[in-house]
Length: 168
Image (cartoon, rainbow, N blue to C red; front, side, top):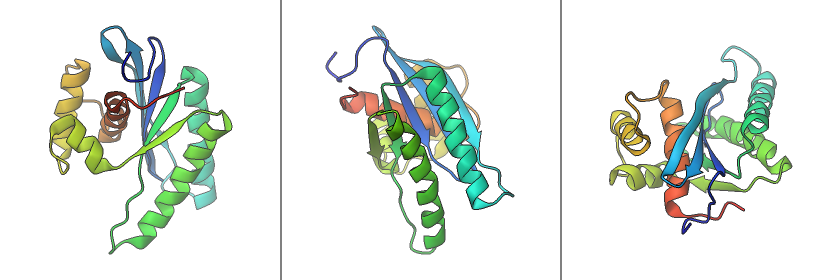
């Protein structure tokens, strides 16, 4: 295949969050990417930072055990100048998620949210409902995945697939 993936390989998309991390697993088929699984990993909003990070790490390891992806695509960290603390906390979450994949020697690719949105909708500032519609169209789904974090994770995996990054 021209995109560097082979039939049967899986791509794991991650929409990182300290409270909720969305994940989506796509399997590459002869007909294109197919949804295998989508869900969320909860960090526990009212828990300590350390406990939340441990939950994210443990939860992602369960996903990695279950699906054995050939690659992980994760949203890049961005910072809004009015909320630098949020970016710092998100960096912690991304760090443990990347560590879990790295320990298994799974290649990790990082994509900006504007790049993902532009790839799937043509608009780098597409709203959530437009992204969910694009996911439904691309994967042949009757309804958008819920919560929106799952659709975002699937969008990241689809972006990786369409950009043709090598996974092995």
